[in-house]
Length: 65
Image 1 (tube, helix red, strand yellow):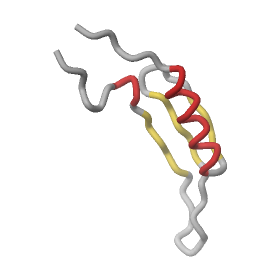
Image 2 (image 1 turned 120 degrees about the vertical axis):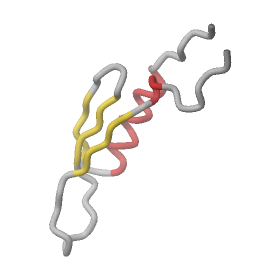
Image 3 (image 1 turned 45 degrees about the horizontal axis):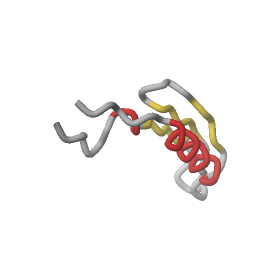
């Protein structure tokens, strides 16, 4: 059976901090890896991408059936 194109072990929830409309975009919020439940807070795009990179390099691919 082929692997799903969007496997659950590579899924994340990203929540950005609310901010007033007239302020510049702020890269602050929280990210959670759906399968492991690992959570991080970020304060920049670099921190967000670093967490994604960390998790995606350590996550195991699901076994083929």
